[in-house]
Image (tube, rainbow, N blue to C red; front, side, top):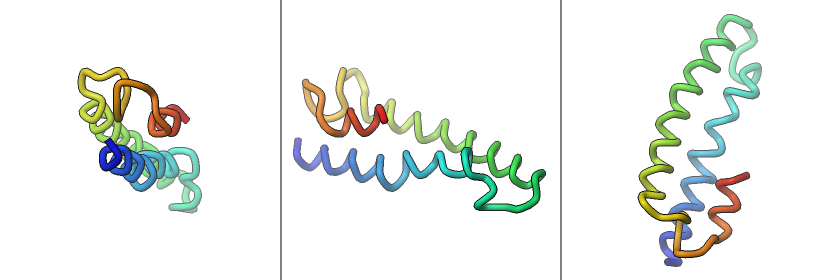
Length: 78
């Protein structure tokens, strides 16, 4: 359970949550408004992949790591 917790937290920290940055802050990636829209659209498409990964991690469980909520669930909710 400890290893799974660390794996889930690592995924949330390095892949899931950072994937939202281009959606909300496209101006950090491009100055042109047209390009910013492309950045946002691309990021949203990639978010679908991130959510699919989270669905796979969750599987048929109620919680990400164990049979009760952990910090990973709280972090995912955030």
